[in-house]
Length: 323
Image 1 (spheres, rainbow, N blue to C red):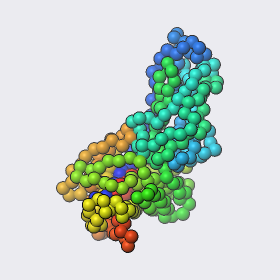
Image 2 (cartoon, rainbow, N blue to C red):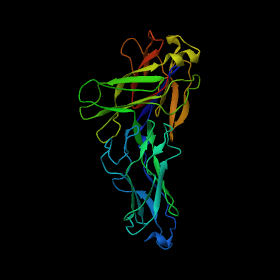
Image 3 (cartoon, rainbow, N blue to C red):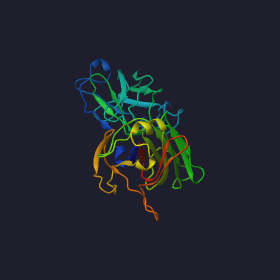
C-alpha cells in the first residue's frame, strides 16, 4: 500500500506502499530444550504466527485480533513448529510478543498479556492493544531457545468510517492538531481510516510542528486500496502557530513523504526518511494549479478567527501528514 506524510512551515504528509505489507519472517530453527515437549536438539523447533493468527488492523486502544477491526474475532496466535512448519502440539513454552523495534511508526505502547504459555503448541494473545495510531506496525514473538518471528504489517487508526455513502469523510484529532479527509473513491463496502499522532520527521528545508495526520481507504479485510484520491484539511492549533515563528498562513508548506518519487516545490530537494521500517522520499509539495489540479499538491492556506492555520491539500495513495 502507498502512504504519504504532510507538513507545513507547519504541515506534514506521508504515503505508505504495498511493500509495507511485507512477508512474515520465520526465524531459523534453533535447538530447544527437551522439556519443551516435542522439541529436542535432534528435532529443533522455531516460532511462527499460526495460520489465521496474524495481527490485523484496528483502532487505538482496541483489542488487536486476527480480523480487521473485529474486537470479537480470533486472537493473535503464535505456534511452536518443527522444521517442516508443522505445529508441535505437545511442545510447552512461554511466548512473549512486543512491537518490533524497527516497525513502530507511531511510537506506540503495547498493552495486554504479552507473555502467554502455549496450549497444544499455540500461544493465544487475546487482549493486546496499541495506544498510538500508525501505518506499518509489526509484532515480534520470542521464546527461549526458539528464536523469534515477526508478523506482517498492520495499521492502528484513530477512527474508521464505513463508506456507505459518497463522498465519505473521516476525522481525527489530538490536543494541537486535527484533520478531516474526504474521498469519493471509496466503495460502499470499504472504510476510510484516519489517525492523528505518533511519528515525526522533517523535510530537507522544513521543520513541521504539528502531529502527523494519517488516512487511507481500506477494504473490509483491512487491505489498503490503491488509486484513491483525497481532499484533506489539516488544522494546526494557534499555540503551535505562534511558537512556529511564522504566524502568517501563507508561509505554511506541506512536507510530503511517499514510497514513490513525486514533483516537489520549486527549489526544494528530494530527501529520504525512515518511517517504521520503510524508506520514503520526502519534499515540499507544490501549489495546485488553478485548473485541473493534480494530487499531491497544496490547494489553500487559511487562518480562522481562533488563530488556527488550516492547510487544504489534495492527496493520493495512503497518506500521513504533519503541519
